[in-house]
Length: 301
Image (cartoon, rainbow, N blue to C red; front, top):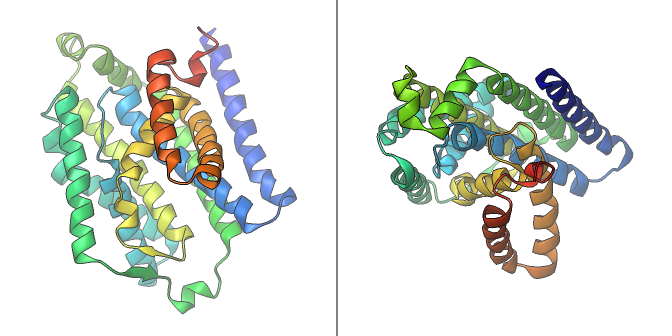
């Protein structure tokens, strides 16, 4: 039964990735590429949060800090003349290092105290960047000459596919089992011999590494943006909403949530402006109340 369910999940993911990859071949235009890129970006970022919040039960609201430092480091190294893959990996490890320096001490906090502590980290990072780097970051002419949004989209699609594959492997590993045990009952997990602190640290490092990947892709795709934009708190709250829409603690859920979020946000932003933030707040409350397992849990209900 489990093997059949796993095969079904793999088929859904493969078909979805191939379908998204074929869209630019039939529908041309930068608008479509932007939408597809955002789908890949939010899929990676929501999975990074899902590892920590969905599988391990640790509500991390500081994802913006790790997303932002990944973008800042990747952009700096890439502009300095290094190949983008090297810059992207370096940016991801910079997020991981930040997690070791700042994030790990917050793991001593539990429940909502951990969420508040990580949110404080994100706010400190945002204020620091706003004061230290108040300007706009532009790509130099040497990199603008060969700018191709299509290549950048397919790069994001490849990274998104690798992220989904990594999460699938985690979900079916001993690490994933330990994370789920900690999520369900931390004290019982500790009593059965699971090293709770060690697994929390591993989970945080994996989560922030993928958040850094998403930040690096953001820095790679956009020609110019204010330095503080990747550190804005929406990068902490959006993945929470996306994961809960699709289904927390699942492999397919964040992909479904990202697709719904990108489409609905575009529709609401065009037709209703800033009111879309209020609408998504109401949607989040309704999902938590009536669909606690997200859209992927409708079939079971």
